[in-house]
Length: 467
Image 1 (tube, one colour):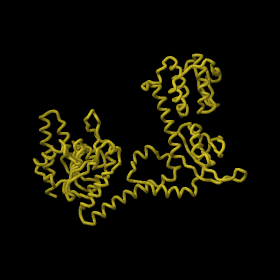
Image 2 (tube, helix red, strand yellow):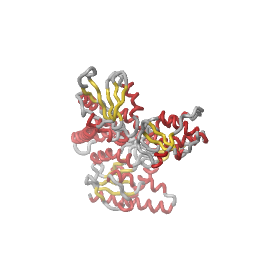
Image 3 (cartoon, helix red, strand yellow):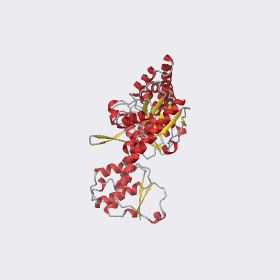
Image 4 (tube, one colour):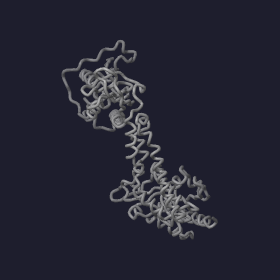
C-alpha cells in the first residue's frame, strides 16, 4: 500500500508529481491511499510505503485530461484524487478514453469539474465586499472584507480573479477553510475564519441598494431562473437581495392597480383595460417559451362575455396568425359549439400558456406539452383575464387548462360533468381539449368522444342560461 500526502486539498502540483511516479512504476490505483496533511487514513497507513518520487521518464496525456484534473482537484469529493489517478492509469492503455463521455468514470469526474466551475462563478458573482477601517500602525486605512462559504476548494484558484479586478483596493476574503488578503502589492494567505469575523454592513450599501432598486426591472424577472442562478444560500451575504421580494410584490401590485383603474374609468369590463393587458402580454418573458415562438397569442372575444374557454396553448397556425383556436382544433371546437347550440361569438377564448411550445422536426413544428413551470409562469395572465372578463362560467379544455385555473393537477375523468368552484369563487367546468378528439385513431371511438364533448358544451350552455 502506498500513501500520498498532499499539502492542501487543492494541491494539483503535488498530486501530479505523485501520480507521475506511481504510473511510471505501474502501481495499481487500488494500492494507493491519498490524504491531505495529517488527516487520518485507513488502518494500513501506519505500515504504508511512501509514494515514489516523480520518474524522470515523462509521458504525455491529452490536454483535456489536464484541464479536467485542474478543475476536479478543487472539488469536495473525497475520492477525487483516487478517481483522477484511476483515469490517468487507464489513459496509458486507452489514449482516447477522455473523449468517451459515456464512460462512468469520465462522467463522474466531469460532474465534479462542472460543480467546481459553477462554484467559482458563484463566488465571483455573489461575493460582496464591505468597507472597514484598519487599526493603527503603518498599514492603517480602508480595507474591504468579504465573507463567502464555497462548496468546494476554490478560494486559492479564484484569488487571481479578485486581484485583477480589485487591484487598487486592499481587501480580505474570509472563508471557513482559508482566508486570502491583498495589500495592493502582494497576496497572502491566512487560516479560515467565521462569519462573525466579517462586518455586517457599511455606509456604501445604502447607496448600492438605492441604485439596485432604481435599475431593477420586475417585468423582465424570471423568478425560477433567478433562483436557479442565484440560490437563496447566497442571499444572506448580498445586501440587494433583501429588496427583491418587496420589489416583485410592488410590481405586481402596480400592474393589478393599472388594470383596476382602467376598468373603473369606464365601468364594468373595460375594453381599454383589456387592450392594455394584451399589449403588456405581447412583451412577456416570464418563461423561455417566448424565444422560439413567433408571438404572444392572447385571448379574444367580448370583454363582457358570460362564458370563458381556456385551452392549453396556441398551436402552429395560432402562433403564425396571433389568434387562438384558428387551427384544426379550433375548427373542431367551432363545429361542436354550433351543434351544442352555444353562441361562439359570445364566448371569450384564451389559453393557459400564451406561447407555442414545439419541437422542430425538419420543416415541421410539432406540438410539445407545456411544463408545470411554464403553466405557472402564465397563470398571472389568466387571472387578469378572469378579473376583466368576469365570466359567469369558465370551461377548462384539457388538463393543462384545469391546472392553470385551479393551481393544481385535476383529473378530467373524475371532475368532468359537474360544476366546480374556482379559487376566486367563480364556477368552472372541465372537459377534454378538441385536439384530443383529433388524435383518436379509431373512428368509432372518435365519434363517441366527439358526441360526449358536444354534450358537455350543451350542459354548459344550459347552465349559463340558468345563471
